[in-house]
Length: 303
Ligand SMILES: [Zn+2]
Image (cartoon, rainbow, N blue to C red; front, side, top):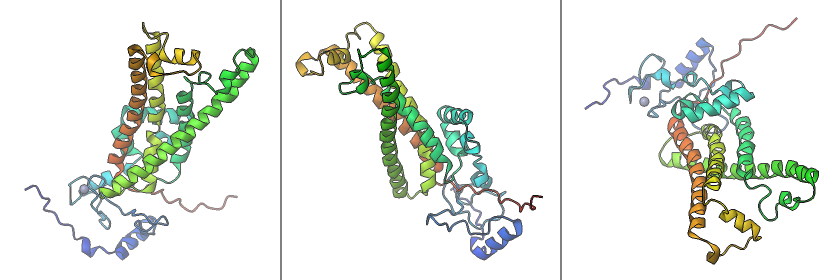
């Protein structure tokens, strides 16, 4: 049997001794397991969830799974570039890092209450833009479509107003989907007995939101390739629009059906990108410890 033999004397370490240690080291004195949000923020092994609360020797290993305790320290989560400094370059680096190295990205992402919001709200409108871009000015009832033939200036103005508006509506739609996902992963983690906190779940969703951007780009590329391919034109969409929306089974050819299936499949693949990132994020954060900001030393009064 490979059961760990080491049994740490956990019962001898009380909350009081922990607080005394915290006082001596200048660390935050509040017990880490009690927070205003009524969530479990106790110090746990990020690999197996075993409570490491009260263990003072961080050089050791988790008594349950043998993972180094330092790997579970909040400081081991060094933060995504966006969490360290929010600016356009770090936005790009964060999303690129999540796509290229999702396991590492979600393992080094900090669990904190605020940074996810700005990342989220700077990403969703971009995903929304790519989601509506191929359709703007094509669908019946679209003001940009109605502006056709009204002169280049009116048409350009219509697009300038309509595209951001549609992108924002799409972003709101994506937010609703992400919120459902957030509820879903919280529920899923709870049913598995994991500790995926509110903030951890939002951080996972915000860092996975680049999946929506990729997810919106996949159909664009798919349609571009399909429309350019022999037989792609006159496409189902073109004929549908040209006839003012008279789609019926009798006008649907086998070619149309294949094109339609491929376009729907491209949207499905897009959704899969987001879901895969969420999956990795949940696995990497199911026991994630809350980031502890270093206590600022008292500054002398400025002269
Ligand atoms: Zn462990």
